[in-house]
Amino acid sequence: MSKSLNRVRAALDSAGLVPEIREVDKARTAQEAADSVGCTLDQIAKSIIFRAKTTGMAVLFLTAGGNRVCDQKATALAGEPLGKADAALIRTQTGFAIGGVAPVGHLTPIRAWIDPRLLAFDTVWAAAGTPRHVFAVAPHCLPELTGALVADFTL
Image (cartoon, rainbow, N blue to C red; front, side, top):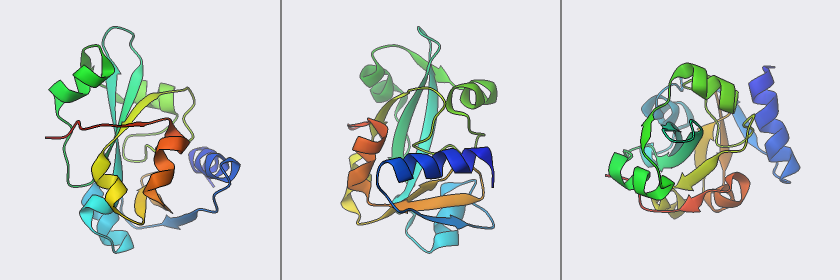
């Protein structure tokens, strides 16, 4: 089992959750993940990472699979200009590769916001640390698990 997947499992276990983690053929995109687990696109919790230009730190926006992050709204929430996070920053600060960034189990603490659309479901699916693993979670658990604030940041 990968170190990344183990970190996600440990974070969920320490929160008292018994996660359903699935290995799937493809989950690099939200649509691939939804098709793999048999849910709607919006039941996929995408972990979108930006680089805060002032601090250089990664920031996380958890959004429903069919939604896109609005750069202006995200920048306003972060309180500083945001830019594209490259693979090196994502790997260094979260410990995950692009396509497998989980909402939990990061190497360093991360500021986070969550799309209210995700909270409309009984269950959502998120990356579990690799591009081939996802886990199911009740979305109302995500703000506490991640420290994410519920906010409108989508187009």
